[in-house]
Image 1 (spheres, rainbow, N blue to C red):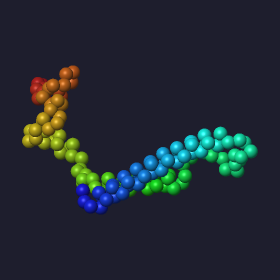
Image 2 (image 1 turned 180 degrees about the vertical axis):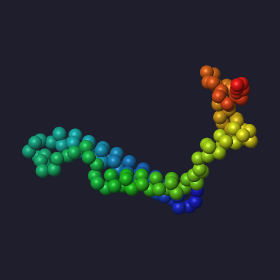
Image 3 (image 1 turned 180 degrees about the horizontal axis):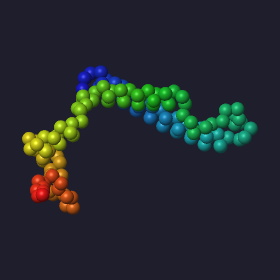
Image 4 (image 1 turned 30 degrees about the horizontal axis):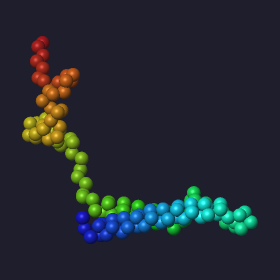
Amino acid sequence: MSFVPRSLLAIGTLLLIHACYSAHEHSSLATSLSSAASLLPASITPSSQPISSSSLPLDISLETLASVLLICVGLVLGAEELRPISWRVWAGRVQRGKGQAGEGYGWLEGGKRKGFLNIRVSWSVEL
């Protein structure tokens, strides 16, 4: 993995950790404010700004989305190049006898599957 994907992953991870910490602080602050407001008399409690602990501020939500986006971009850029799917090539080599049947699929070959009819045996038809 080169420098750019690693740095994107590091920055995204730090932003995600900070967003989680900020969300936790917001939640605990809202809880403590609501419990402190319940102790005050009704005449002192400001009714113009209700305390809600259900929604996060916009900056924390945007920071979380940006960090997840940076992490995803870093993972995609740092991934190895995808290899083409070559099941057809492998099956052709095994059928011609040039490939090894035990390349991870040995349990499929050699008649080890019980209950399956082998249709590739040589048939002799007499007329």
